[in-house]
Amino acid sequence: MSRPIPVLFVHGIRTSGTMWRRQLALVGETGHPALAIDLPGHGSRMNKPFTVPGALAAIDEGVDALGGRVLLVGLSLGGYYAIEYAARHPQKVAGLVAAGSCARPAGWPLDAYRRLARLIRRFPDHGLWLHTTLVRLLLPPEGAADTLAGGVPLQVMDAALGATGTLRPLDSLARYPGPVWLVNGSFDQFRLHERRFLAACRNGHLVIVPRASHLVSLAQPERFAVVLTGILDHVTADRPGPIVDLSE
Image 1 (cartoon, rainbow, N blue to C red):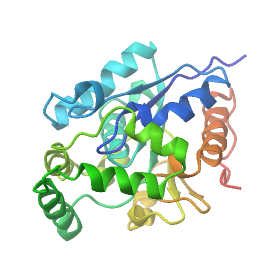
Image 2: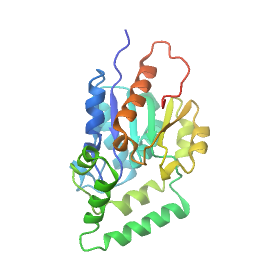
Image 3: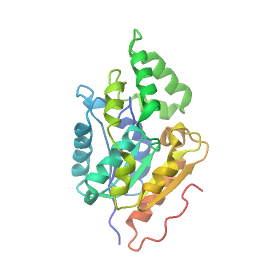
Image 4: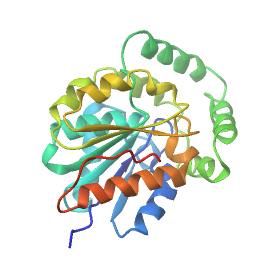
């Protein structure tokens, strides 16, 4: 009988590990150990500066806490660092799920995003009202509550985006030999380069979740859990078969 594969979740920007509470509960029902970490500048690490080494160290701590090779699941910002971690430590990653992370973090889109972050930071509340209002408008009530539960890091945006701009996710995907699932919502604006990301993978598959936004696991938690359960079945199988379309 196959051993359960631990699952490590890595959150998006300006949220925390609490955004994964629904997925932690659903994965727990399958018998797989699961943990959601906080990256530097977020949640329980809100007072720490965001850096690439710090983010990778936080993931490494989570892997060690789970006691071995993991299915590494990252969304948005967390997806880029999950990709980088898998490339650097392939022996610790049984499979990689990068959700909402299929746009190259470079060039004018990144520059525009950073300029917007700096502008919002000048607001009297540093953008707290705008952020919480958009979260509550764009997500179901449970997803919004989970997103906001760990606090809103108001100062981390520019530093996190700047650090992420130094990553080369296409090169990193090419270096990771294990199975990769790129999971995107059908309405995700970060699908910009998904075909290039898929082509970079040695053993990759693209999954599109219908009627889901960029925050796919929060917008469509049950659909995302079905995808994740299928991926876990594949990773834990003694004789894994071909990767199938898990979005149906």
